[in-house]
Structure formats: C-alpha cells, structure tokens
Amino acid sequence: MAATAETATTGGGTEPVIIKKYANRRLYNTARSSYVTLDHLAGMVRDGQDFVVRDAKTGEDITRAVLTQIIFEEETKGASMLPTNFLRKIISLYGDSLQSVVPGYLEASMDAFARNQEQMRESVTRLFGAAPGMENFEALTRRNMEMFNQAMRMFTPFGGADHERRSAKGQPAQDELSELKTQLKQMQTQLDRISGKN
Image 1: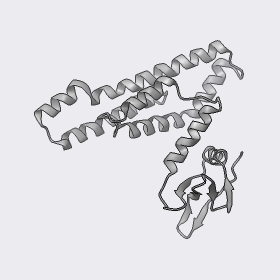
Image 2: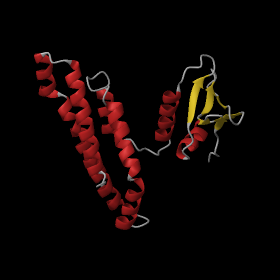
Image 3: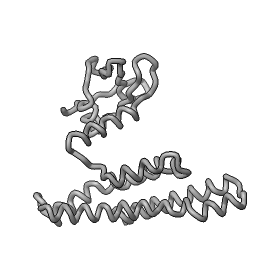
Image 4: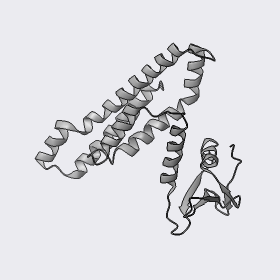
C-alpha cells in the first residue's frame, strides 16, 4: 500500500508523524486520523516518511519494536532478505563485549550501501540485463556474501588477544574508547572501498 506524504508541521519545521499503538495492537496514524497497518508503515518507510510509534497508554517510544515486527512480517511473506548465517552472527553478538559497537557498525554499513544503491542497480542491470538468470543471481549472492564476510572480519581489531592485553595492563577506558573511534573510521573507509566508493 503506497503511502502519501504525511508530516506534522510546526513553527519549527517538519516533525515525524506520530503513530499510536493500542493494547489491541491497532495502529493509529495521528496525521491522518485513521487506523493503519504494518504494510502502510512499511510503505511510509520506503517513501522516506519519518514516523515515531508510541504506546498509546504509556507514551513509550516503541518504534524499534514495530520496525522489527515489519521486518519479521516481510521475511515470513517469502520476501526473505536476511541470510540465516547473518541472523546467527547477529544473535551471537548479543551479550558480547562488542554489542555496543554493532549498532554503529550496521548503521555505517547501511549508509554506505544506500549511498551506492543506485550505482549498484545500474551495475547489476549492465552486467546481468533486466532479467538476470539464476546463475547470475547465484554469482551476485556469492559476491554479496564475500562482501559481508569481509566486513564482518573488520570486527577482529576490537576483540581477541589485543583486547585481553589491554585489560591485563589496566589501561584507562578512555584509551580504549579513542582506539575504537579510530578503528570505526577505518571501518567506514573499508566499507566505502568494498561498496565501490572511491
């Protein structure tokens, strides 16, 4: 379902649309004064429309949970996009010492992908044509997995022996934070190189 442009305008500019979620799981779009579905919210995301989902009773921001639910719904419809190995890697990082770094890494990865999205579409069309065959999809999938695995290896500098040595020496946490920031910049540079941005 395509979403129309919906914004809440104030004297200070445009603000995200507020979506209220009720106990019966119904979603209410306050800008349109009507109930909507997860499909509608997915359409708003695709159209670049910003929104915040709040619990109608408590006012708590539950946007992340609802976006996760949209992804779940899309995956169960057969439009699977998240490889099983990727999901396993993400789950394994919960509770890991790297957990706090993962959100920034994933956001940087998706930003790099978005910057090169149109270029990638053109490259796929040029290489495989408008209707690529199964063998070409397989080749593209292999390439994507290679890129993903290479990106995941970027985590290596944060863990393992280096981390243990720093802990054993008792160096201040500030030194470790500075090093993490430096390595995040290096990760972004490598992500840009992987995605073809030079």
